[in-house]
Image (cartoon, rainbow, N blue to C red; front, side):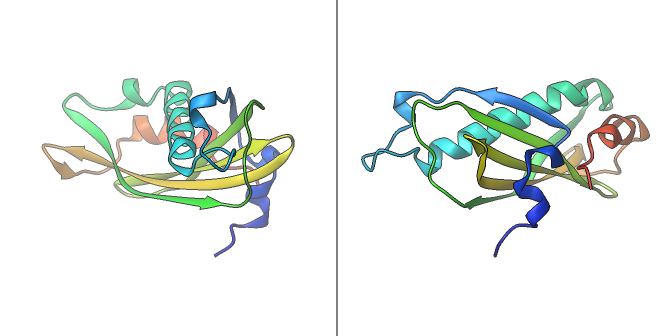
Length: 143
């Protein structure tokens, strides 16, 4: 399944961060390994959460956990070129939200990642507090 064409444009993402590639990210075929790319998405997602101040918007005793993560590989990535990880919020639900990311190298999108995060309290899903919704809204994907 191909991603929405808008997701292939870095301008769709309200947040970007440079992530340098490492020689350790290269597989025997001399391109970036798919597992290492998942780690790069994770780095971008964590940096986005820091920018959105998600930790400070959560209620005491709550957590945000990953319920689903989907990675689409669109093209090979190479070392030593730097990657740009674009990210934004694609959906805000009742007790969950979704982070959409694109990974770019040399101006082209080499993949996308969608992560569903569930807000929990006492080990169960719980409604997203308004403070968290307020933090997420400015980071929604651009049309």
